[in-house]
Length: 165
Image 1 (tube, helix red, strand yellow):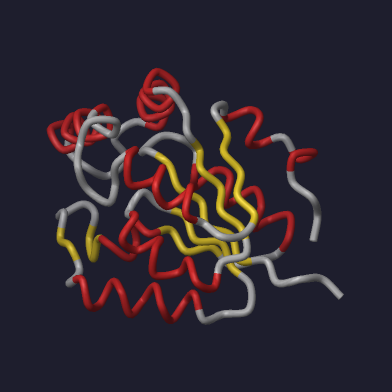
Image 2 (spheres, helix red, strand yellow):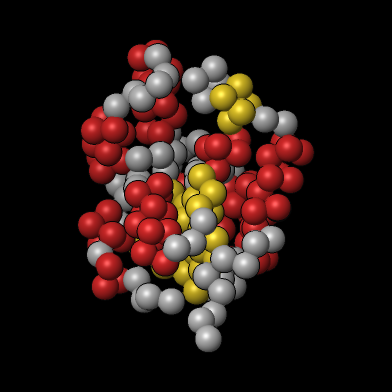
């Protein structure tokens, strides 16, 4: 019998969290929760959900038997830590994150909002919030079960690095 697969993926904007989550979800047929969809009611309008609503959405998803939850929002990740079996930290250098964000482009947001995202992502190592390098490092260090830290996107996406469950 396969053990439950409940994986958390953290990292800066542009680190490849969504790409890795999609890869694992497709391979293992596991649902994914992207925390951007929890935090933002409407990303284009930059309309945030209430903290209580975001917390409840995360708790409900994390109650499932198998899942992948990915995002930069440490306070939401911490809600799922008690049920998680694995934690992956995509700890990529800024140059890689920046290049990935530029390759991805602004999507549905305005150019000004996209520039704001780039500035916010560049501050990952210096800001003091649950979405910072320091917060992700603490979550990683305190995680009591299997944890993996990658400093390159290709390594993280290598199927051989991930056992099939």
